[in-house]
Length: 224
Image (tube, rainbow, N blue to C red; front, side):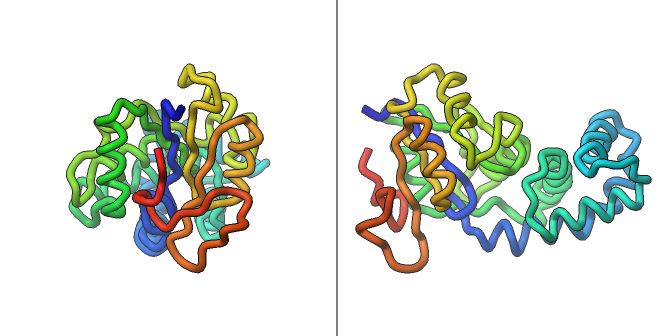
């Protein structure tokens, strides 16, 4: 019996193109200006220091900005970078520069599952702050009340079973009572290794009946 669903964002609830063609370029273009303007704010300063530690050196501010931009170009899942991106995106959402992309089928099914008493959670490489912003600013309204919690890489790598074990422990359910949704087989493998049930979202391309995880085209194809 499924008592909770944990969903990824990119390629699952939301378009990959929205993240890669809207959010990432928006943050990259404004990252230098944001760090120069807010680098002494306590929250930002702590994130910059964490980024310096990840980079393995005492980088000056301009060099650190260059490193952060390089990480964006490489699509690196660096926790302080994701947090900084979230702060920049917050300004974009508030200004109305963009809204959070959510597939219509995802919005409808999430509402249905939550109404049926299934607890909903998000696990994404983007910061929890960025996750909340995306779901708070959608064409379908504020969807954040649907979710019981959010997880990012502070709990562990999405490709390591330990992260999913930690999520199950935090939620307070047995792993087999949790369904994980993603478009990435490495993440699904890790979730299954931790004991969770899995469904593979394949929004483009052909479905493979022999795939290691049950594949569906969209949320409407998920049997819960």
